[in-house]
Every structure is written in structure tokens, then in C-alpha cells.
Length: 78
View 1 (cartoon, one colour):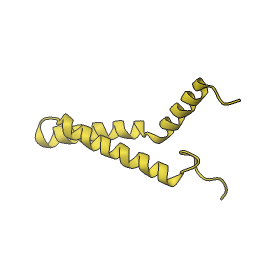
View 2 (cartoon, helix red, strand yellow):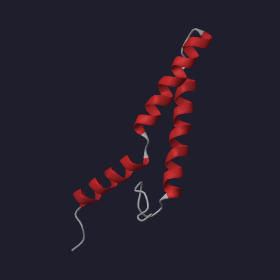
View 3 (cartoon, one colour):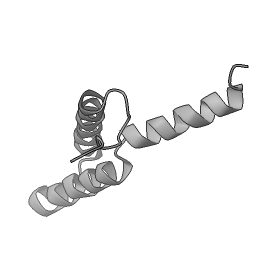
View 4 (cartoon, one colour):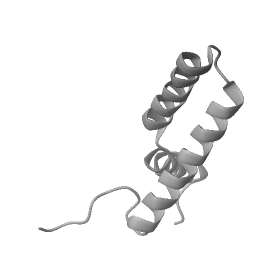
């Protein structure tokens, strides 16, 4: 019997959560906004969102490339 749609969606949700670096993206967003605020006197939201999006894409692609079959889990063994 094939898995239910609910099970498939839940599995996809967990796989996506393993790939997308949420906490790291939040840190990059705040870091870029803070750096702009300190250096230019105003926060540039567009530049911060662009930097965060590129960072998230690079990290997600690296995680896919690094662990293609196991998601974000480290390889077993020593």
C-alpha cells in the first residue's frame, strides 16, 4: 500500500526543514541590517534580503550536494 498524502507532505516538510538554514538566515539578515545601520546610518532592507536569499540558496545547495541521499544527516561511521 502506498503512503498516504499526509505522510508524504509531512516527510517533505521535514526534508525541507533540514535543507533550509532558518536560524543562519535570520542571523545573516540581522547582521547585514545592523552593519548597514552602523556604516550608512540607515538599514537597506533590499540589500539585506538579497544577501540572505543568496546565503540560503548556497547553504541549501551545499547540503543537498554534501548529503544527497540522507538529507542533512551526517554520514555513519568514523
